Image 1 (cartoon, rainbow, N blue to C red):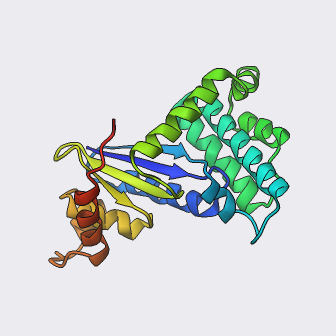
Image 2: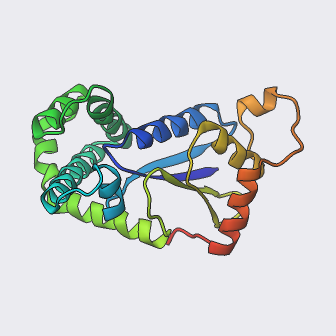
Length: 216
C-alpha cells in the first residue's frame, strides 16, 4: 500500500493541479493508496503568492487569508475526509479558476455545495480543535523537512518506512516513483516494458536515502 502526503497551499494553483494528479493516480493504481492533503503555511509560501517587494501590511493580510482558508479546510475535514477534499478543491477552483476573492461568504457557499452541516462548520472554523490540527500539520511538515508547497512524501508501506520526497508532482513523476517502488499502475500494465529508470526518479531515491524521511 502507498501512503502519500501532499503539502499544499490551500489557495494555490500549482497545488490544485498536484492534488488532481494524486487523485488520478489513486484511480489508476493497481494497489491500494492512502493520501492526505496537508496544508502548509510559512513565509516562503506567502512570498511566492505576492508581487515582488510586498509591504508588511500586504504580507500580513495574505498570511491571515491563507490561515483562515486552512482553518476552513480543517473544519470541513472534521465532517469526513472526502467532504474535506471536495471542499478544498471547490474552494481552490473558485479562487484560482474563477478568480473569486476568498471570504467567509465564499467558504459558506463551498460548505453548502459540499453538503456540510453549516452550523457545525461555522463553529469549527474558529475552534481550538481546528487551530490545534493546523499546528499538528506544521509539525509534520517540519519533521519531514518540507519547506515548499506542492511537495509530496510517498511511502511504500509494503517495502520500507522510508519516504520519497517529490517536489514536482506531475502525473508522470508519480508514475516514475511507483515504478521505482515496484508498484504498477493500469497504464504500466498495458504499456511496453521500460527497462530504463527515469532520471528524476533516480535522483529522488538517492536524495531520500540520504535524508531518510520518516513519519513520526
